[in-house]
Image 1 (cartoon, rainbow, N blue to C red):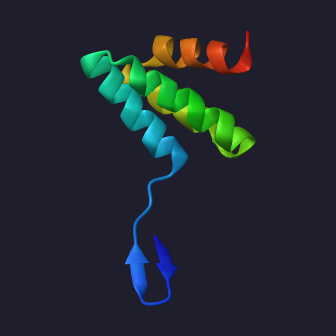
Image 2: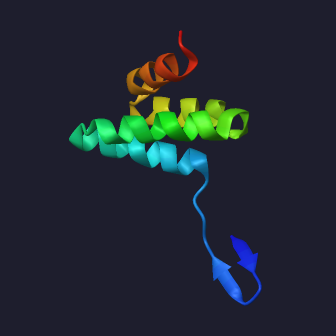
Amino acid sequence: MVILPGVEAFIASPEDVILGKLWYYSDGGSEKHLRDICGILKVSGASVDREFIRRWSERQGYTAIWNEILKKVDGA
């Protein structure tokens, strides 16, 4: 939760947004979600907890998708 003067707001972490987009991609296959994830990783850089995403991706069955995204972003 972020508190601004007179305003209370809830903001999703980059990790939560990425995991949500992995779910949406696996559900519907839209490449837009993959592009969005790549953009988040490029902009946020090392501040994204990739290990957290890896663990949750594994639990949800998104390991192959997550690994492909990392290849695109990291150039491996």
